[in-house]
Amino acid sequence: MDWHIINYRDYIDGPFDSYESALKEACTLGNETRAEPRVRRRAPDFYVYRPPYDRRERWQAEYWICTKEAAVAQGISEEIFAQPRHETWA
Image: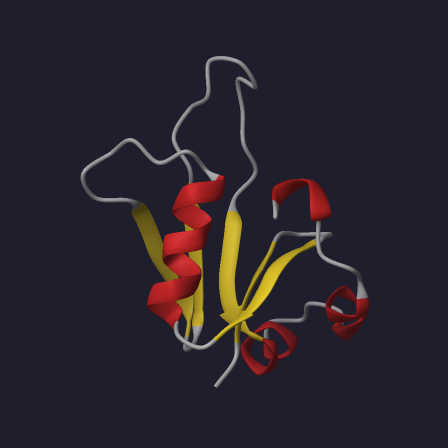
């Protein structure tokens, strides 16, 4: 099963071979500093990761860690997965 990192309008990164590897990458992207990252389950195979407050950026968007099937089932456009990933974050 392929896991992806997206947000409400952009494809961020993926595919990953497991949820754990996608979460690890999301924590890296979010500059995670907490002992336990803030993650909540939104639906089967769909998790929302909230990165910590960033003093420079002041706010960071949520990262959605999900399978394509779970995202589509939640009403997210399949077109998001056709976008190129953000090369500046790779």
